[in-house]
Structure formats: C-alpha cells, structure tokens
Amino acid sequence: MTKAGNASVLSLLIPGVGQFYNGHFLRGIFWLIVTPGLWIGTGGLLGWVCHVISAITAYKKAMELEEMDFPDRF
Image 1: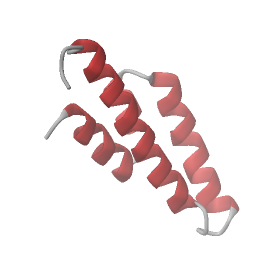
Image 2 (image 1 turned 90 degrees about the horizontal axis):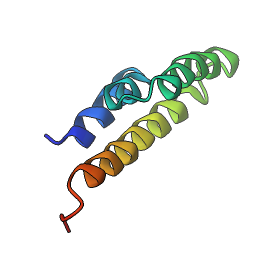
Image 3 (image 1 turned 45 degrees about the vertical axis):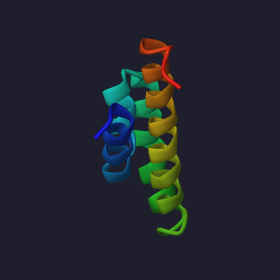
C-alpha cells in the first residue's frame, strides 16, 4: 500500500491520524476536534461526512508529498 493509501485508511479509522502520518499536525488536530463535535452536535448525522472528507484530504496531501519526492513520475 502506498503512503497515500495508508494516510487515507488511518484518517478513515480516526479522523486526523492520516494527517499526522503525513506530518500535518495542525490539520490533524483540526480533524480530531471537528469530527467528534459534528458527531455529537448533529446527533450522528454529519460525523460520517467528516470521516470521509478527512480520509480524502489525507490521501490528496500524501499524493502531493509523494509527487514532490518523485517529480519524474507520471
């Protein structure tokens, strides 16, 4: 599994952990605070949205990091 895949799965399990894995600590803290807030604040209706968005952003940021490390890849 690629680094982007790892980051995505980690953030899907616990929002923010994938961002920590990528080295983006402030983004990780943001997701760790916002997601439980939405789970509790909306009675569980919007918490899943944060899980998915957190996983997508972790994946995209990891892909950007990989592209910076290997700029010659297609």
